[in-house]
Length: 225
Image (tube, rainbow, N blue to C red):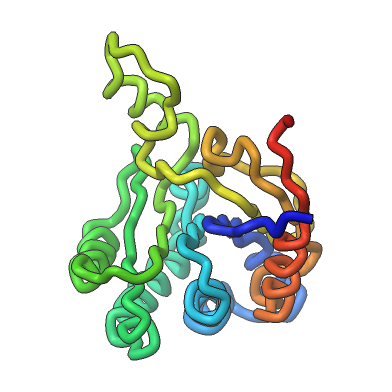
């Protein structure tokens, strides 16, 4: 069997609010734990320990921004800003040369959020290690529309190089028990393996993810051949 090489992982974190309700936690403390503890550990595990080249995390969707009330968005926005600032000072990330990049959607996010995100990007701009992408206010349809505008009348073989996220995805991991992609990158996911976990995002441990990466390496991926 040929060992499958995993280059790009997408994580769709889901279940934070259900976990908060089940465990009688506030949304503020839930998102703080999900970002500072869980997401930080996953970045370390996937990019540094398991040497995956690209990790993309769906941190806030277009529908989140457009459909949720301000009181629900505030703990997400505030804790993501807090976490971006912490990651700029993270010594493990610095030594590994992780490059952070934001893939923006067509929705308006708070100025302080964009400022903090761009500071994180600038602080790692010269890094040459693995890449960690964040999908912020993102949905796949808007990204595809933007790519089509760039193409105009050019003859192309693939739309993917014109997308904001232009690397094919090998493995998608969604937490929280729901079995859907919810606006995640579609064209990039054409041949992705998909894992749906019943655990809510705050419950995720690095050994769960490591097991999936190992299982991926055992797959014989034929891509229609």
